[in-house]
Image 1 (cartoon, rainbow, N blue to C red):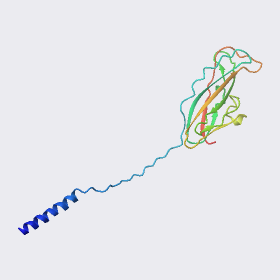
Image 2: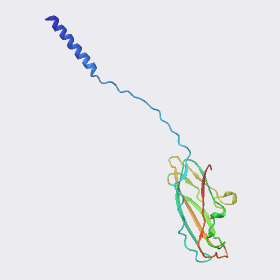
Image 3: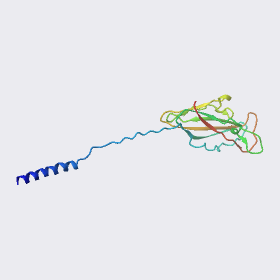
Image 4: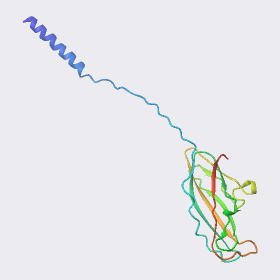
Length: 183
């Protein structure tokens, strides 16, 4: 009986020890993964400016009409803005008349978040607007870290030439603002 008790005792110890080993919780194991990505230079308009079709009628030789529209420019770098300085940007009679209106523009920028532009402070005629080579004023957009958007407001003013009255009728044009890299 003594041998049986010893065998049973040893067998019990073996079961207890190996049972505890079988039910032991393993330690945590980590697996790492390095992740990287590159953000390219981004410059894009959220949309075209909405059509400026709410200019009030010109009712006298000395009257003028102004209006504006705003769109957002997304960028993660500094930009230069230029405008179309061709006659396509001058208000021209839509009918048989060859008359044009004095067409002037300016830009304004929001300053929320840090990215902003240099407002063009004075009205400039279509052929000088954002064209420093023609006596106009160039403008830049300066990016601020953490802010990748700026609201750009295009203002337009229409009037008669000094001492002249344009033919009656509808007038229209298209202005294009181009963003390019660098300042």
